[in-house]
Length: 503
Image (cartoon, rainbow, N blue to C red; front, side, top):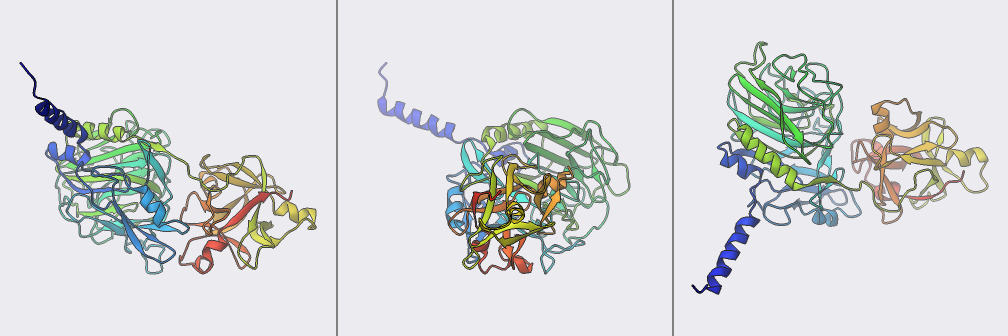
C-alpha cells in the first residue's frame, strides 16, 4: 500500500503540536476536578495557553509601569523585557496578576490590625530584581519579600468561604525565612484584622515557635488558621512535619470539612510527601471553619508583616485536590527546572582582597566609605592620610555571611567587625554569629546605577543600597519614607568605584 506524503506530514505536525502543549499546573487541577480560582507567578505561566500579563513593575526613575508577560503562551516570563525597562534604575513589583481569569490580582497590602511601614500604613512593595532564578536555563525573577513587604486582595472571587473546600500550593525559597509572623500565602480575613479562630487557611513557612512546630529546628510548612500555626491536629508539635532543607520547596495546604493536610517536596527534584492528613484541630473555632476568602502573600491575616520569604509561583483551587492531582503538579514544577543564578553583576570582587569604596557623586569624589567608631560614613582620604584613616577606609571582602553568592565587608582595622545595616543606618558591628547579623551584613554588588562602578545592594532588603547622605552611610531605597531615601541624586549616591584598599 502506497503512503500519502501529505497525510504523513499532517500526522507528524499534529503529533508535534500535541507534544508541544504540555499541561501546566492549572490545567492539571482542572483535569482533576478542582480548578484554579487564583494563579500567581512572576516566573512563568501556570496554564499552557496563558499569554497574558504575569506581573507589573514600576521603575524609580520616572514611576512609569510596564507589564511582564511570558515569552510565549505557557512559557517563562520575559525577564529581558524587565531588565531593559529597569536598566540604570530601581524597580518594584506593583501587581502580581491572577492568571485564572477571575481577577484575583495581588497588590500592595493596605493597613490592618498591624500597620505597614509606609507613611499611610501600607506595606512595602518587593524589589523586582531581588530574586533572580532560571527555569530550564531561562532567566526569571521571583518575589523577594523583606519584613514589612506584603500583597493582598480583600475582594477575591471564587475563594472558599465558611467551611468550604480548597487547596493551594506555593513554590518558595527554602532558605529565606525567619521566625516572625507570618509568611503566608492563602485565604485570610477580608477586614485585614484578626476576626477569630478558623477565619484563615493559608500556607505558612518559617521558624515561628509561638504556636505549633515541626521536627528539628525548622523551617516548617504549617497551616495558618488564625490564632494558631498548625503542624498537625494539635497546636503544639507534629514530629512528622519535617524541617525543610531544599533550596526550592513546594508547599501544599488543603482543607475541607473536618479534614486538612500538609504536603511538601523539593521543587527541583523528587515527589511530594504528606506531613499531615487528618481532622481539624480540636480547639474551639476550627471545626467548622469560618474562612473569609481574601488572598494574602507574605503577611498574616491581620497584616502582621514581620516575616520574610521568597515566592515564585502559587495557586488556590476550588475543591479539595486529590493527592494524585498534586503529584502531577509537583512533576510539572520539577520539569520547570528551577535553579539558582548569579545575584551580582558589574565589576567583580575578589574574596580576600582589600578594597575601598570611592564615592562618585559630583562634588564628593575625594571621599571614601570609612568608619568612625561604629558609625559608617564617608571621609576625605588620600595617599597622604594617616595610617589610621587609611585603615578605617579599607575593607576585606569575604563570602557573604548569609549567602555565599554575595559578600560581606570586614573592617581592616577592627578584625571580626563588619558593615551591617540596622534600622537602615550602616554600622560597623562585631559579628555575633546570629542569623540576623549575618543577613544584615550581606550585600550583593551590581552594576552601578549611574552607569559606572558598583552599587552595593542589601541581600536581605534588596530595595536598599549603600548610600552616602550628608556624609553618613545608610541602606537607602529610591524614594522611600526616610529622609535619606530622597530620590534626588540617588543613582550617583549609591554608585561607588571599588578600588584597591588604602591598607
